[in-house]
Image 1 (cartoon, one colour):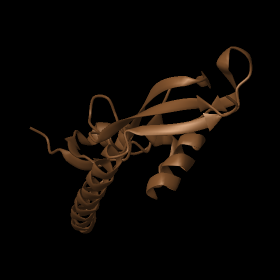
Image 2: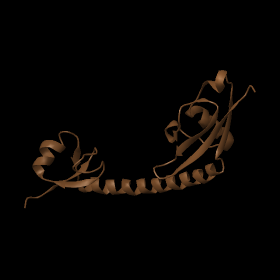
Image 3: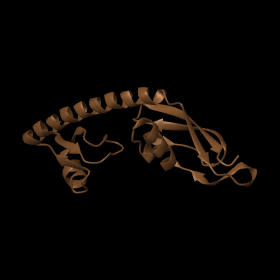
Length: 154
């Protein structure tokens, strides 16, 4: 059996694995395809030591982010209802629409928690009523809020 070449993936590749994984492949495949196409690069002893350090640091940071997201999630569970007031026209349609920025601003005003547009998934809101939105803090940590859109000119 021939020696295998050890590489680290620079990109997600369907048959080999995810970015950052260390793989062993035949030398011809490595030097003729993977390395020239910047899919992978060779692993040296120094690089492997450096890579292990980054993995440990990344796992620590991910653990801290999970703890912080859980704290925010517990805090947001107290705020399950958000009330927004908008001017309405005929048939209770509001002027403009409610978007993620309106929700972000209101949540920040009420709780002091700064969310991003990527964390919020919500329907298109252009009339008064009650709507549910989803807040995804991380992959496994999410929360929902109910938005009450009320007319201001009643």
